[in-house]
Length: 456
Ligand SMILES: Cc1cc2nc3c(=O)[nH]c(=O)nc-3n(C[C@H](O)[C@H](O)[C@H](O)COP(=O)(O)OP(=O)(O)OC[C@H]3O[C@@H](n4cnc5c(N)ncnc54)[C@H](O)[C@@H]3O)c2cc1C
Image (cartoon, rainbow, N blue to C red):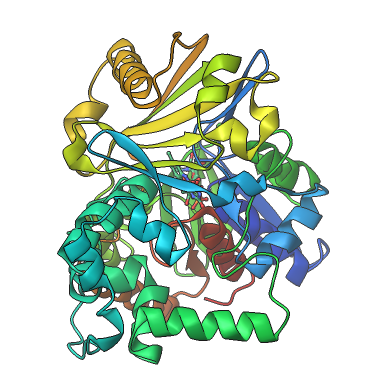
């Protein structure tokens, strides 16, 4: 009999797992069945089309930092589309005023983002001793220690809000920003690390993507990539097939999906943390308890489309991070059509703001109309927009982005240890997704690929 793998979850982690398993074994040896609860593939990658507007309800795109992404794009038969170079320009709202985050030190000093005292403090960074305490440190405390408190408040907190809808004082630096922690360990200073890396890039002729990678998507949006991965995969896909039971009968795995019992030799559980927690309660109680500790806030994505006048008034750039004390409730705003022009009609501009998250859960409870009014008025004030938007769309994610908060490293270790104990007794279970090794889309893809290839 052929071996059978069941993959639970049709987001990027599950689809990557199914493709990796197929790459490792042909159909004559391995049958693969992917089960997705929803009526479509994609998970958080959800692209909504209305007239000429294309709204990414979840991720804007992915950073091409993970080598597996190019392999998956080739398997999907698509061509990735890098974001426009305008994406390099980033802005920050402080005291209700939009300011560019300049890369050049002199221009940055003149931008008004930091006070002269805080700028002086920033220059001390190379002389701050590296931390030897092995306990987890918050992103805020790390930034305050190395860059000064004002830089932590005005730069790092808005960045954590804009990227994770998270609270920098709770987010764990080594769990959420492992590269930062590594730079301090390796170079003793972020400034020294930057200089050294710049030298290395220059001497090696530089790289197109830079250290943070290049933001990419697809002409028809990110979800088209997941659909293509499903269509072109040499495996069976069943949508509208929620799994509500996972068990082991001593010989093989038993999965129940939409009432149907299924047998499996291997299972990759590629769902969100909270579904994994429920399915694992009896099998891996320690892991389930650890997963229950992950906080996942409610986030609303508010998309507004404007005509040419607003497009002219908005700077060419990625978007703006927003400092909390400025009175705005939007966590950050992206100018989508600056990044990918085809996301709106010619000469128009599509903006997306995130609302809610870890620091303002009440805002995500507002009605759709209230959310639209809130974001519309905030953007009008910020950018001096003369006319209201002609397109409006709201998407809610009651459980959006898992927060890697203090204690996350320990929590992830408990999950892995319980999984290893379980696999020693009854082999064949793997976990994939964005709740252990990185919240970003490409990280979820890489975790899925590893699980499907049996590398976990
Ligand atoms: C608003 C928002 C903005 C984001 N922006 C970015 C960004 O710009 N860049 C970036 O890199 N990342 C971003 N992310 C994160 C990124 O979207 C995720 O990390 C990634 O999509 C997670 O993929 P996944 O496959 O692990 O999980 P998911 O995409 O959540 O997929 C899990 C799948 O499992 C299915 N499932 C759940 N339970 C069951 C069950 N019982 N049976 C069967 N199927 C089940 C779900 O329906 C879902 O389809 C964003 C996330 C959100 C919410």
